[in-house]
Length: 357
Image (cartoon, rainbow, N blue to C red; front, side, top):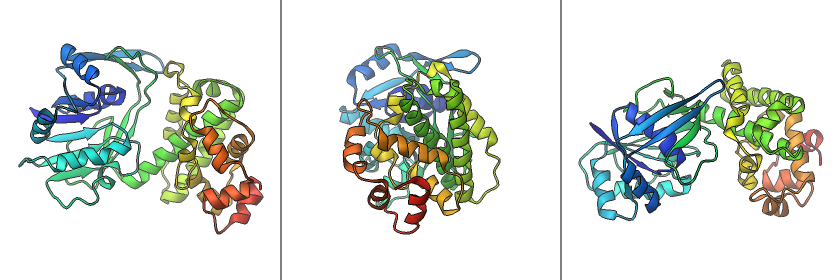
């Protein structure tokens, strides 16, 4: 049997990546810094995944998994050397160290490496200075919403929908194409997900905060929220088409997103989605980048203006990172924000005219 090592035994690792690896006939070993979690995995060797769907919930049992403590260097090195496929879901800032560790492991195996992180080209950008041809690096766009979990249990609840898109430019395909796994144009798929899913998610969170709603599904259940969501996704789809220069029909993809955000079982808190605003509202990110395309082509940007007005005119003390963002970037007028934070040097008149000064 083929061997897979997955760094990160958290909810995404257990609830999404591990079952995909097993479906592709890999023996799965988790590596994690949480020694108690690893001990629990090794004691039970199994857990349950509950998929939360629009109409029904289904259970899947994952068996024959094991784990290694990240601090057990000899065992980690031994397992890396045996692996055919090495994957991660640990957070982008840890990927580079993991890849260095893989690179320094002596093995004659040809291996594949996939970083399942919410980051642009997480696999290749974290290994850019490596001069090697032993490891096949594959960038991935991963999409799965995981609701809050019971901390003491290995069992995990996940949304029914899931998608893994791998860069079609790879020469080696360690995962079989399926309903969930596909090989496509990475650039287009990354920005489609970043703008239409993550961008809409962010806008719904701040719209919900402005209405004192707690969950994303509450935005979708309210008529005012539904209209805002619909108008937002239309604008984001338009921006994506301007960027990608494709005539792709985005209505099915957009409908799936809106349906997913409507699911009460996810208990998707607006405070969680809204956190780290200084990163999420930054240049080249899920809000500014599509807005830039829309402004350049004089397209509709009403929902963007609504969100900008919300973040400038409110204090969300319970949102992680908002107070620092407010103090550093939102304490002056909008024109200063466009100039200093978004580095707008041309067309700034368009921004002030359409979004306010």
